[in-house]
Length: 203
Image 1 (spheres, one colour):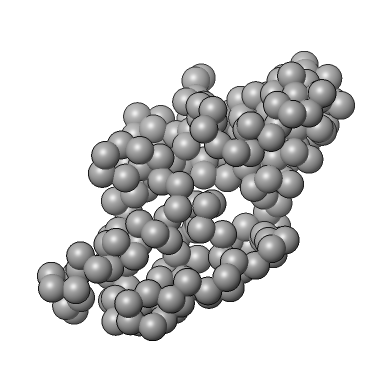
Image 2 (tube, rainbow, N blue to C red; image 1 turned 60 degrees about the horizontal axis):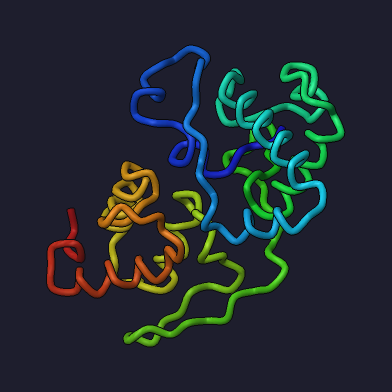
C-alpha cells in the first residue's frame, strides 16, 4: 500500500474530513516552491510523471482508506492513465518523500532512512536534534514528539502535541500562512517563546 505523504494537511480540508464517504473533489498542493517539484521538471518525462501523480492523488481521495492506493496497476485501471505514467510517478514520489510505503496493520508508515543524515544543531541549552530526522519534511506526530523530546527535554509532551495540532489545523502553515519549510527551526522558536510561559508547566 502507498500513502500520499501529508495527506491530512496537504489535500484534505476541514470540510472534506467531515465527509465519511468517498470524496468527489480534493485539494491539490501547489508545489511550485518545493525543490522536489523543481527537480521533477528537469526530467524529460516530467509531464508524464505529473499525469501519473495526479491520477494517484485522485484515486487516493476515493480510496476506502483515504490518502492511500494499493498499487500502480489499480490506479492505472481506475484513472485510465497509462500504467507506465503511474509507475513513473509512484517511483518519483517514493524517492522524494511525497509518498511512502505502508505495511498494512502497522501503527505508522514504514520509512527508509534518509540518504544523508542531518548534522546535530545545538541550541542555547546544549541539546541537539537526533540524527536522521529530515527537518524539511513534515513528520508524523510520533516522530515530532520524539524529536522535540530529544532536543528539548524540559518541554512537556502536552505542549509539544499542542504545537503539532496547531500546525496540522493550519494545513502545516505558520502563523503568517506560509508553508512550514523547516519545522525544526520553527519548533525551536516555539520552545524559546515558551521558556517563561505556561507551555512548560504540567497540564
